[in-house]
Each structure stands twice: as structure tokens, then as C-alpha cells.
Length: 80
Figure (cartoon, rainbow, N blue to C red):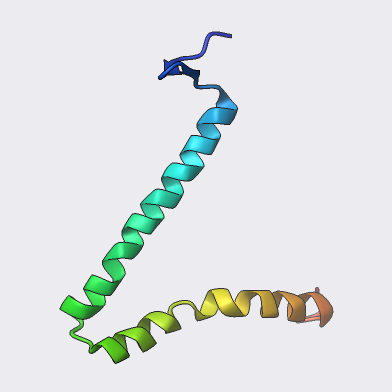
């Protein structure tokens, strides 16, 4: 197979998948930079209120592992 090369590195499917994953993570981080400015400028929250608001946005990810253990160990609506 002939692969396109960038800076002497062949863009194989594996290499391209890793690059795409890094690009996606960078795009998410770039979008996350806007969140504090939106809270401060648009919503007009004080630093303390902004901290509380932004910390509440992380609760679903904090509770997800706990909910996973509960859902795996206790039948909910007859299924696990």
C-alpha cells in the first residue's frame, strides 16, 4: 500500500486514528475554554457563583461510576 506522507511519516489508518483522537480532544479543550468566559460575561455571575455553577456541570460524570455499580448490582425494572 502507498500511503500519503506528512513530514516523512506515512499516514496509515492506525496513525490517522490516533491523530484524529488527539484532534478531537484538543477541540473539546478549546470549547471548554469558552465556558468560564460565558459564565462571567453573559450570565454575569460572581467568581464564587461561577465556581458553584461550573462544579455542578461535573456532577453527572462524578455520579456515573457510582450509578454503574448500583445498576450492575441491583435489578432495576427487572434487568441488570
